[in-house]
Image (cartoon, rainbow, N blue to C red; front, top):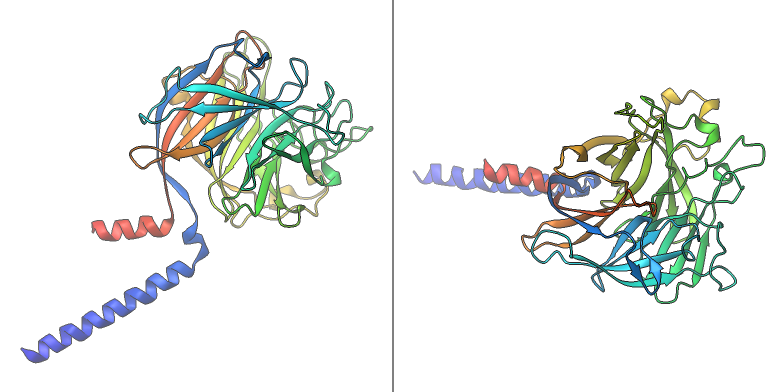
Amino acid sequence: MKLIQKLLSFTGIIVIGLTIILITLLLNNSQLHAAEISQIEFIGEAILPNNSTLKNTEIGGLSGITYDPKKDVYYAISDDRGQKAPARFYTLKIDLSKGKMQNGDVVPVGVTTLLDQDNQPFPPGETDTEGIAFTNRDTVFISSEGDGRQLINPFIQEFALDSGKLLTTLPIPNKFLPDKNRKQGIRNNLAFESLTITPNNQYLFTATENALIQDGPATRANVGTPCRILQYNLFTNLPEKEFLYQTEPVGEMLNLTGRFTSGLPDLLALDNRGHFLSIERSFTGLLFAVSLFEVSLKGADQIQNIHSLLAVDSQKIKPAEKKLLLDLTTLDVVLDNIEGLTFGPDLPDGYRSLILISDSNFNSFQRNQFLAFKVKIESPLMRLLRRLIRQ
């Protein structure tokens, strides 16, 4: 009996030791620190009425949104090209204290005018501000699509939260800049819509909404487009890497107007290791189709040294991996022009909040729509341990 007890004790020690070694190996595997969405649930919609104003400024064109956890507020950029008011972002309060969202829970509380290098508001037509990302130094980075037709370059710039003063301008690689021959660069209104910063504030990512001119065609019915994800190092403020992101082909649905648009309007960093949420949004004449994807850059080829995807065998380039998380057309809401997303605070039940917003284009037939979700974010290691415990 004593011999059996000793053997069992010895076996237990071995099992514990092997478990510790296994967990140590798992913890040293960086991919097991990657964040993934294991659960998502829709928790409500809110609409800001058209013609809402704040400080004599009409609210609309909400193309990007970011969350400030220090102040528990959100900043939403307007893509108005200076026609309604100078380039600006709004400050919003969103009440999620009941674990859901409904009309009246989104309240505009501030508007900040952006200032150019001369400390003046941007002149009309010089900006098409689309993306916004909060930093840990009380600033926001903002992206502008520029204007491909007018040869106005896109930009990514950092602004002070309190004053809107321009602080930093990130360099844009030449391949993204439009030229007078229309043979390279961004397409008009299909450039840097997205903007996100990793949780450690080390990297900033943006992406083209559609292909660069030299990379391939823009989207059309049943045909996707090759977008470029661009990574910046915020320690050096320099672009470091580029990756291929291929959008999904979208069919024409009840297209009675003949219009068709589709692309990649926003990214949201899940972790510091190249994992994101992405929105793909399409308009097919009468209806909007919106899908939410999980994206991984693991294994994706770097393409910063490729000037034109048409000049190489792009079929041999490994793009970012994508997994469909949610088709928003399955929700019991009428979708509008969804263009931005951000995480918010933790909800009362411990889940993380996720907010999506729409760009109304200051159109009376569209809406300033806010959609709220609760999400569960886990690493593969946590999911593995949870399964082992259940067993």
